[in-house]
Image 1 (cartoon, helix red, strand yellow):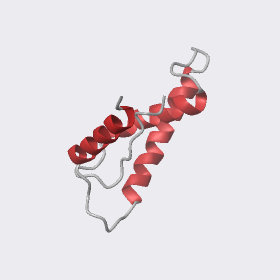
Image 2 (spheres, one colour):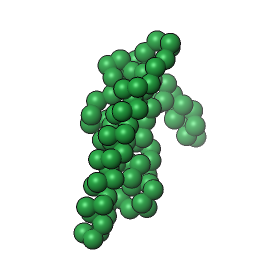
Image 3 (cartoon, one colour):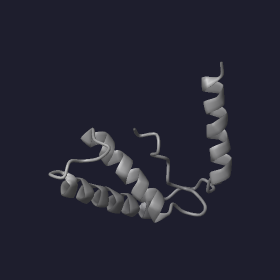
Length: 89
């Protein structure tokens, strides 16, 4: 359920609002144990996603590093290679 939560810090270009929203959604899904909340819980679920996304944006805006920014394509290729090695038959 949390496989879509990715590192968002120190990329060039910076994380988009869509990436932050997707990670917030996955986080709330994981801690609530629900991929789709009931109607009774939908408002609380949606508010939690918005709150987590807002705090995540604040965190990313305030983090500093001396490391050079990572390239998304290079990181994706590394992840794919790790996955292939891990699941190789």
